[in-house]
Image (cartoon, rainbow, N blue to C red; front, side):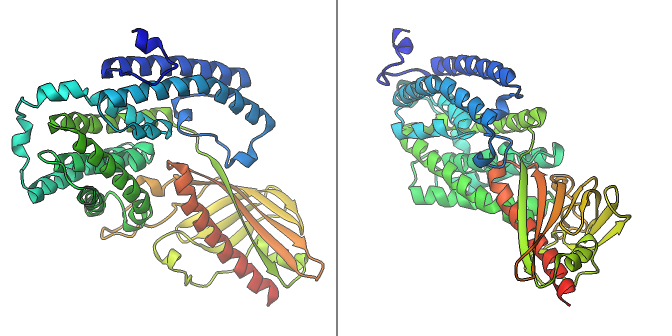
Length: 455
């Protein structure tokens, strides 16, 4: 106990029971302090805020009040970071694991997974004692390299496909648990099963992890959970995380003299993932508001450009590969009335956006809200009219505007801006895709207005 209270040195060891108790106590203390500070500043606070930095699109958008608030939280976090680092180093030493794994303590969401793994991994002394105990589960794992790899891949693919179906089709949850936790544990678990009887090389472990994530994608497509386009968009992130999990599995199976404890990690993983998805579902984190601005220079005065901004005729059939995948694209714009209160309808390939006009500053600025919108895409699939939950209201357009700036040479700079939210996590990854898609939609409209105004 004296060693546990000595937080100034990272020397020594700590068992998993004390590590678990210490972590839960520290989390409870810090969370309640943060909640008190957030309430004093007038901000909501939940456990999800430890994974998401801010509801603002970037640090440059923080107000002075935001900056003070986060500075106070950082000052409060420093002693907890130090204590957590010290305890994690001691736990790694006690489990005979590489101390460099402490870097996981500083990664959002991964630190939660890492904490659970360290609680599951026994001390080095326990491993020495258990190496003489035969494992009943081990008898079902082939000793051959090909057999253990096959079982590791198939077992994790079946269970992971089931967990993904529960999260996506059952809960409609496209969060950290789905896009981060599941791919990571997919690589970790398949590698641990693969290396159950004998430690395997890092290259073969990564190959097993990569094969696992590929087969999960095939399974989700085959059982009509997702279409090919969304799977392709998620694939880069899933591959990186699965390889990451496979590498950690390689490190763990190199350490175990008896790998029976690997099944503690495997079983905890498949118990943890549904819990994380349910936790995210219950917390319902507020999505970040993003803005995308695109522009084009038109060889016409603002007065002429304005006529084609308010409404425009049918656009030609798209030639861009992006819009041939099923992603919704604009067709035409219609308006009923004039001035604030008029209703504009921007018709897409999947239906109309309903856009009540909020600002009518002819010929400089047209702004509008979005009160209704169609589905974001038609999924590319072997199944007719496949509509997973994410195509409805997981991309939400909030408002938009056109600004016209007269340039000295008689031309017009036309800028189009869309403010939107996405209900996918981690938003940092997904908004790169959505920004790109919205930018291409903007250019399709702006280029059409340019052709009409210049003709």
